[in-house]
Length: 332
Image (cartoon, rainbow, N blue to C red; front, side):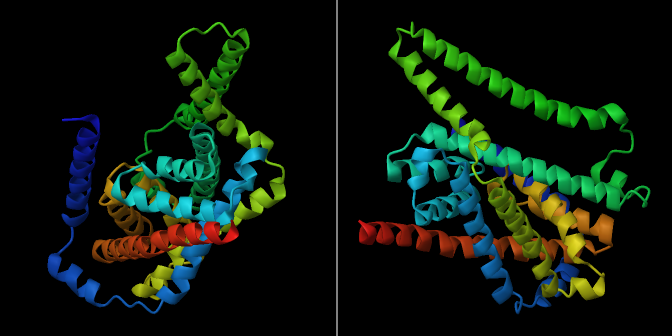
């Protein structure tokens, strides 16, 4: 059995485990009744927000690209973003590679350098996620036991909190050191092995992309686009509240959608196929522990939202790839 098959098998087993954990406290009859009560009049508001948020991600990605690569068409960048999301639904994390590889091959660019820009983008999004998480901690600081129940941090002391930024800083430092060593080795030019030379070139391309954040020319635009992306994600969490009238029944607000957006981001980072199981369990438990939403309603919300996301991306991704091919031919 090859490595990819092993990884897929582990992901499937993890998904099954998470699904079982989400279902074990839910009465099937109650779940079915809640499922039947779902409405879909929110979809015309949800779909444009989803598409526009992903378009803003493509626009922001363009700011990461080094000068020679900024000639890439917007249609190609958007198609690459949508392809990445679609592939992620099929094979966890593979979409992070398919996006830069598609754009690189379409434009004759270095895949390694574009992959580095994806890593830089994800690091910045991690920073935004930590800011939102900090806001959640401040918001719920006056409710003893809530965060302990949600995150299991009752026994944490100050050094547990300090270790997270320390690990992030150490990782960034290691990557910068790796880049410096590669540059010095290239200057010496005494590498005889063609294979080692190719590996060094790939490493340098990757590190060039990784430090692309230093070369962003318009930081105000970058911040505006980032705010737009995450605002879209929050709205993509808030608008589906209306499928079960959660905003009325349990008083869920826009800020509550921020908390659930953070939780969903954690759920989809667990490498299960398409986030199946992990996303559903995290959303169900977060809604129950923080907002007293019954597990059946929380699981219904997560399931419907997950399916709608997948179906919209399944439609938009092929259309964006077709449009990119058509627009490129017409433009040339």
